[in-house]
Amino acid sequence: MPVLEKVIDEVPVAGIQKLTLIDFPDHIAAVLFTSGCPWECRYCHNPDLRCYCSNPHISWNSIKDFLKSRKGYLDGIVISGGEPTFHSSLPELLKCIREIGYKTAIHTNGFYPHMLQMIIEKGLVDYIAMDIKGPPRAYDRITQCQGTCFPVSKSINMIISSGIKYEFRTTYHPSVLSEEELIDVMEAISCAGCKRYFLQQFQKKGVRDEELVKNYKIYRLPESAVKLGKDLFPEFGIR
Image 1 (cartoon, rainbow, N blue to C red):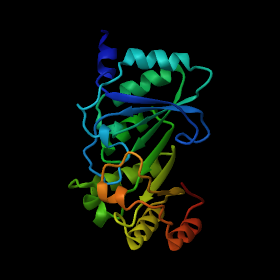
Image 2: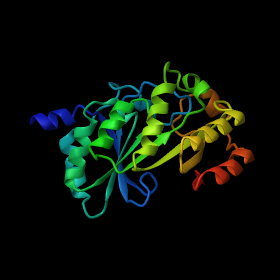
Image 3: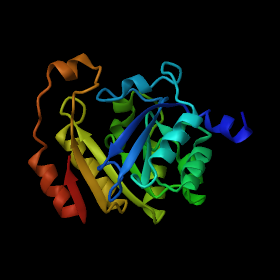
Image 4: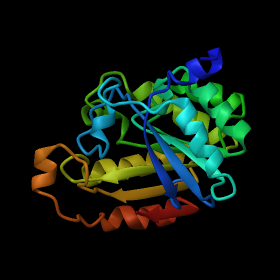
């Protein structure tokens, strides 16, 4: 196997969604899902992708064949997860996808700002979507991981100042995030300069947390948060 292809195969792509119209705005895209994420968010809908070793991985040759076969139908590729910035070979994967002729987007939790900085500076990404889990004081609780706040804050500021198109979004479930905490998130991200923000309803599909699933219902987003979102952000929506 050529050295470059070997390096790319170190990014563990565990699945492909062949079509999406929402994950890369204004693009007809596919999604590559990578394995590996250090966080344990209770409402994660891809928990099988947390562990690097628990999923069979799709080879780069197979991915490349798929991408070439979809030329003319797709114009963008989204790298999601798991957490794609967890992998040191992500820049090589993005570079090869772009050389085939696609624009690229990343979905990230922002825990690895050094990787975000690298792909931004190298011009390897056209769109970044970042999840904001909660206010700083709640981050370690929600992610069940220590030391998350500082790197996440660094990623937020980096994305906003990058000049790249972006979105931030927060998933709401009252057992995970209180209304007060949600308001704090929105005010903080607005003060940081965010212009495009979404509130997301909790979805039970794929979630392993039995308490969240057992007590599932479609919670109405707090009216105070919806009103605030419309006031704070030039681009605001609900999913």
